[in-house]
Amino acid sequence: MDRIMFSEPFHAGNELAYVEAALKSTVWHGDGPFTDRATRWLVERTGTRHALLTTSCTHALELASLLLELEPGDEVICPSFTFSSTATAIAVRGAVPVFVDVDEQTLNIDPSCVEAAVTDRTKAIYIVHYGGIACDLPALQAIADRHGLSIVEDNAHSLGAYYRGQHLGTFGTFGTQSWHDTKNVTSGEGGALLINDDRYAERAEIIREKGTNRSRFLRGQVDKYTWVDQGSSYLPSDLLAALLVAQLERFDDIQERRHAVWSSYHENLRGWASDGGVQLMTVPDGCEHPAHLYFVTMPSHEHQLGLIEHLKERDIVATFHYQPLDSSVAGLRLGRTPAPCTVTADRALRIVRLPLHAGMSAADTERVVAAVSEYPTR
Ligand SMILES: *Cc1c(COP(=O)(O)O)cnc(C)c1O
Image 1: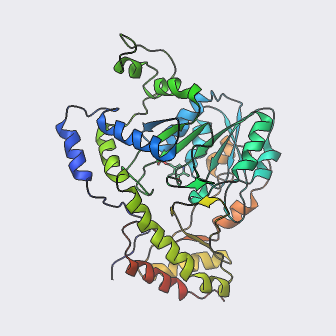
Image 2: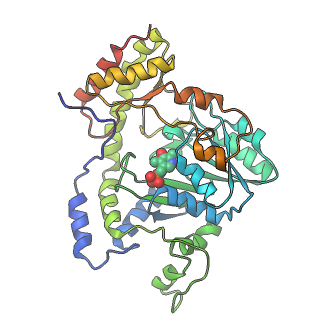
Image 3: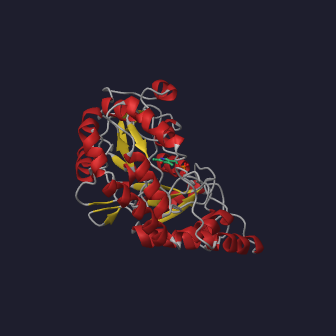
C-alpha cells in the first residue's frame, strides 16, 4: 500500500512544455509573456482591479506593508492563529503585530477581539481566511471604517473562494496569494498581490521593480527609467510564471478533484465525529470554500497526537497546524498581545488536518475515511 501524503503538487499537464517554451525564448526575467497570461487570469477570475505576480505571498504582504507606509511604532492587528508570514510582513517595517484570538468554529480572526485591540496607533488589520472560509467581512469592514483602518487579506488559502459571490482577496485594500507547493495551485514558490484600490496601482509597480519606473518605461510611457521610490525586487522569473500558467489553466479540474476529497471527508466522517465528540468543519452561510484543507477538532490533545500516530501507522500523513504566534519566540519579542488568545492555544493542540491534494484517488480518500473511522475517541 502506498503512503498517502498530506499534500503534494499536482501535475496539471503542460508544465514541462510551457517551461521549455519559456527557456527557448529570450525572456527569462520577470514580466514576460507567461507573467502576462497569469496576471490576466488572476484579474479575470478574482475581479480585482490589478494583480502583480510576486516571488511569494510573504513578499506580497511586505509590498502591502510598504504601500500602507507602515512605520516603527505603528500597530497592525492580526490573528495569533496564522503562518508567520502575516506577522513578519508587519514586523519587517518596524511595526508591531498585535495578536488577537480567533472564532471557535472557523478559526478566523474574531471581530470582537479586533475591536478591543484598536488603539490610536492602529493602522491596519491583516486577516486570514482559514481554509478559504471567509472571515466575518461585514463586521471587520465596519470596524475598519469606524477607525479608518486598511484591511489586507492574506489570501493564501483562498484562490477559488467567495463570500456572497465575491472572490476573497478583493474585499480589502490588498489581497495576497501564494503559489507555494502546499497550496491549490503552485509554481513551487511564488505569490501575487491583488490591488483593489486604483490609488496604489502605480506605486505598487514601482516598489516591486526595485523602486524604479521600469514598468512605465517598458510600456513606452517614459523615455528612460530611473530610481524614483523605495522598493525591492519582488518579481518572479517568467520561467516560474510558465509553470504557474500550466496550473492555472487546469484550475477548475484541480478544484473538482479537491472538492471530491473534501466532501467525502465531510459526509463520511459525520457519524464517527458525533459519536466521539469530534467537531468537523463548519461553513457559514454565504461562504463558498476552495477545498484548501480539511481539519477535525479532537476532544483533547492526547486524541490529536493519537489520531496522527494512528494514521501514521497506516501510512497516512496527517498533521496539526499553526502554533500560536503570540507565544512564539519572535511574537514575544516583536509583537503585542492585549488579551490571551485562548481559542488559538486550545485549537493548536486539538486540530488534525487530513491529507488533501488533487492527486488523491477515490480509493485513497476511502482509505483515509476508513482509517480515521477506526480511531476510538471514547
Ligand atoms: C502559505 C502561507 C503563507 C506563505 O506563503 P509563501 O508564498 O510561502 O510566502 C502566508 N500566509 C498563509 C496563511 C499561508 O498559508
